[in-house]
Image 1: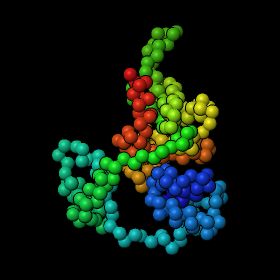
Image 2 (image 1 turned 90 degrees about the horizontal axis):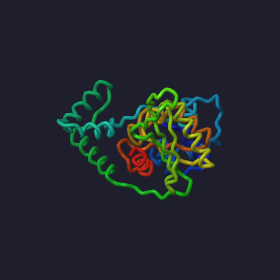
Image 3 (image 1 turned 180 degrees about the vertical axis):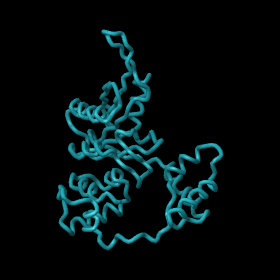
Image 4 (image 1 turned 45 degrees about the horizontal axis):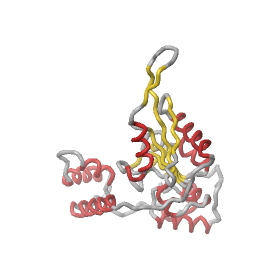
Amino acid sequence: MTKYREIIRLTGLGFSQRNIMASCGVAQKTVVKVQKRARELSLSWPLDEAMTDTELQRLMFSKENKVSPNKRMPDYAYIHKEMIRNGVSKKLLWTEYMEDCRANGEEPLMYSQFCYHIQQDEQKRRATMHINRKPGEQVEVDWAGNPATIIDPDTGEIIKAYIFVGVMTYSQYAYVEAFLDMKQKSWINAHIHMYEYFGGVARILVPDNCKTAVIHNGGFKDQQINEAYQEMAEHYGTAIIPARVRAPKDKPNAEGTVGNIST
């Protein structure tokens, strides 16, 4: 389901269409359509808390609930991941895709179309888009790859410490904190402490794909943010734009700082 509520929320907070597209995983035409329809209905943030997402969808686009006759498109993120493995071919993936479509009563693409769309997706992946950021606008967050170790002064026990890293994209100003675990509470507390340290809140968060941030990241149009993390973002009035899977260039400053800390 399109994230109508989130598009309206981020619009109300003054985010650009580009940032809303990235945060909600939708195309620009979807953002434009939702914004236009919201204006027509005089809908603005905050919405009525009693209104469910389904009710919001019906209110905005009651005539657009019909099943689309279009053919099912491939899962590009899954295909990209599988193609890296030895012995996996496009023909094998197409056969798997065909069987899945038939099992779900969906119309598949022909093999030539399947290959064409995969090729187009690969070309998009290779293209690196540089976006200039303003000071304080965006923070990249991540856990350091390897845990550090600390020694209990009383018992001498060696304890693992997990390192949280937050780096401002523009200035590369960093915040680092150690935790005894990488659970949800630690992840949220790390952000709260980071904001206190920076003395303010960034408009955009770019997290890695850890479970405390992202439940599922299947690409541009298939993302599911962790519920607690999303609630934190709404509380602080910020947007979450997850880094793409296996795309370190989406958060180069966090990756670089993680590397420095890990060594």
